[in-house]
Length: 507
Image (cartoon, rainbow, N blue to C red; front, side, top):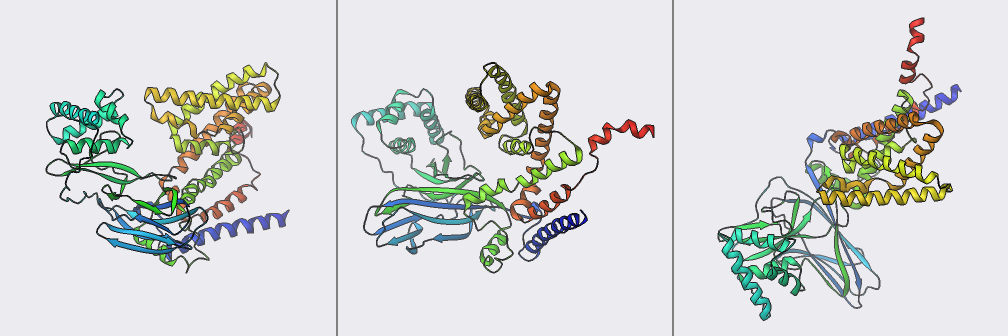
């Protein structure tokens, strides 16, 4: 027994100090900041080009961003395995070009960059180009002229005219001419907007870019509309009519030119994966340049593809929640429904936020318990009963999302982040516990699970914890050492000390 305790202490201590040592190494030698307040928000954007070859030579051209709107490009990386690669500069700007003589399989090309926005700058004020009016059919031209006349009468200048036009195109019941134009063109609504503006004599062009959302995968290019009001260029969101550049919008290309061109291929697509890092710009650049030099001890996950970085940003928080569960169960003595069910509930809370998540969880479990009690009268086998509960939970989620959308409660739409299987098993376990132990035990374990989940959520959503787990994942080794030590604890729990408090008074 003594040898076992000695070995466990040696392993736990080694893990703890090894994790701390790697953290100090990265902080001192590589310049990683220990506090999130020392850093700036740096976005890693990974572009993924997919296409299928059609035979013969292949040429892929990707227009590269120029750092518009105050954005600064810190670092760029191109993956061109098996392809010839060059960066072409012309009057439009820069573009990446991949070439290959023959290709017989589907291919993916990558372009990754790190960007940040030190200032919120306006786009360069350039003179508007000549207006190019697309040739229209007679009925399209007549509808366009009627719509322009109608909106001109309701507006005072070009800016108000464009706002009314965007509002009309997004209305649930648009004007008959606007509805006809949207249905008579094969182009998307934004292109139809530009056609109408051209006939109204207002220069307009697209501003294309990426709506930045941390951890987002399979993001596609979004487009804003930029028009000239006679004095300045004005940006308007064609989806909601908001004026101005959105704060989370990274400008990729300004104009109507094509961003991606593929010769010798078909079914091409351009997707993006995004992740936000709280690191100083110089630290990120230094890390990229020195990653091979410190590959034995640098446990940074920044070298992974961005899609995996976004996944690990959440996964690396799970050990923190596991530590909370261990402390609350072994030291405090809180009873929970399942050992690590509070961790999964806390992960759902990260997506829904705390109060909406708690409300949705209580509603779903309460209704599920009622339906489960009704199913028990049908004498179903366990597998059929669980399957029925899963189906009912999914139906409740769908109903909650639809009702919330109709009521304008956007937060409730995140009900889909709750793990369906976990909710079903929670309902099943609590119903069995209800039958065997009574209502009191259900309330004790259910409230204990929610209490631990809330504490885990508060710790996981802390900015410092998020920063440390993502930039110093080696600290998980230290957490593992602490959990191993706590696993040997056999003393009284805090709840037991309260339970036997009267015995201490008698002595």
